[in-house]
Amino acid sequence: DVVMTQSPLSLPVTLGQPASISCRSSQTLVYSDGGTYLNWFQQRPGQSPRRLIYKVSNRDSGVPDRFSGSGSGTDFTLKISRVEAEDVGVYYCMQGTHWPRTFGQGTKVEIK
Amino acid sequence: EVQLVESGGGSVQPGGSLRLSCAASGFTFSGHWMSWVRQAPGKGLEWVASIKQDGSEKYYVDSVKGRFTISRDNAKNSLYLQMNSLRADDTAVYYCARGSWGPHYWGQGTLVTVSS
Image (cartoon, rainbow over all chains, first blue to last red; front, side, top):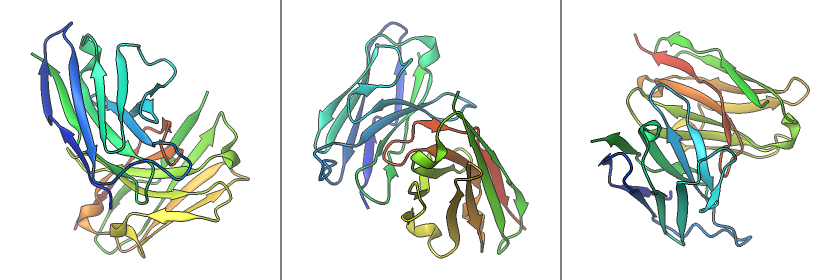
């Protein structure tokens, strides 16, 4: 199975400051069609997960542009340019290239 | 508006069975892969199973193979998860989600508790 490793697991941030989460996969996430199926999800306290980014860098509709995704192959990053109070929650990367699908452990973002 | 509404969760003893359902609306159900994802209390997300649009392909996480069965009824816009031989470590909130390689829409989840 593809292991997804996130870091850090806890991320205290100051409002208005940037934040960055790393996600590394144990195998390349490039699929035979050339696409890279790496997604980022946000889960606010008490809510269902919400997809923010798909295929590495594509922002879902309604997602603020302060969220951005980048990376390739096995190394990926989610960046928040200026953290707002509503960004508190747990962020997960997930690979959709290989079966079984696998998630990272989650990164808890909190305000300092 | 896309809606996914799970039902069927509850408390069951180890070794018991439950059938989860997910009612979909607001999109062409038969045109999408569907998945189940679970989250144990205080833990992270774990993908459980996915099914292709016509039901011809199904995939499972190793820990549920042979015990869980994913199915769908496109005429009823519904997704199912039959769970047999339940164990304590199956205790989780089970989410229904649209998609497989990157689930876009998620339901609110249904809680399954396996305990004696």
